[in-house]
Image 1 (cartoon, helix red, strand yellow):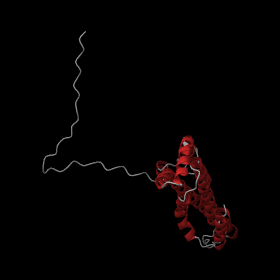
Image 2 (tube, rainbow, N blue to C red):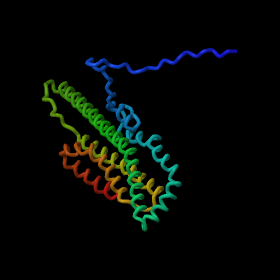
Image 3 (cartoon, rainbow, N blue to C red):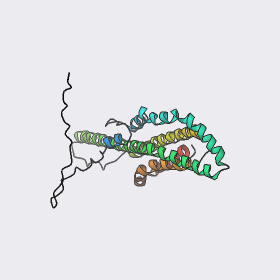
Image 4 (tube, helix red, strand yellow):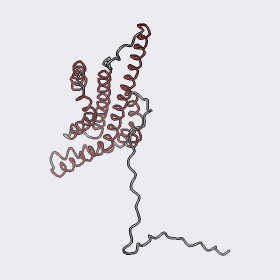
Length: 250
C-alpha cells in the first residue's frame, strides 16, 4: 500500500509591519493579585475570610510549608559529606575557603527566596485577620451600647445623650495577642532553619545569624505601624514584657 501524503504544516510567521505604520498593541503582563489571592500566589495557602489569627498562622504551617524542608532534607546526607570534606580543606587552602563561602552564600540565598514570601504573606494575613476581629468587636460593642441606651430611654421615658465611643481595651489585647502569635510563628521558622542548617554543614557561618535577622525584619515591618499608634500604657507594658521575656530570652 502506498502511504497517504501528509498535509503540509502551516507555519505561523510574524507579519512584517510596513514602515511608518503604528506597531500592534502588546498585551500588558497581568498584575499580581491582591489580598488573599496575592498571599496564596506568594506561597502561603489561602485562609478563609473569617479566619482568626491563630487559624491563619496554622494554615501557613501546613503541608506546603513542610515540603520546603522535606525536599532539602532528602538531599542533605549527600551534600553534608561533601561539605565536611570542603570545610576540612578550607582550613588550609584559600581556594577551598573561597569556594566554601560561595556554598554558604548560595544556601542562604535559596532559603531566603523560599521563606521570605511565605512568612510575609502569612504575617500580612494575620494582621488583616486581627484588624477584622477588632472591627467586629467594636461593632458588637456599639450594638450593645445602643441596646442599653434604648432600654434606659424606655425606663426613664426621656432621651439620654449618646455614648462617646467607649471601649473595653479589646484593641490592646488584640494587639498583644497578634504580636505574641506572629513572634512565635517566626521563632518556629528560625528554629527550623537552625536545625536544617545542621543537616548540611558542621561549622557555623556568619550568614546564619544574618538570615535570621532578615526573617525577623519580616516580622518587624508590618507590626511597627500598629505599635506606633498604641497609646495605652498598660498595653505598651505588656508588649515590652512579650518582647523581653518571650522573644529575646528565647
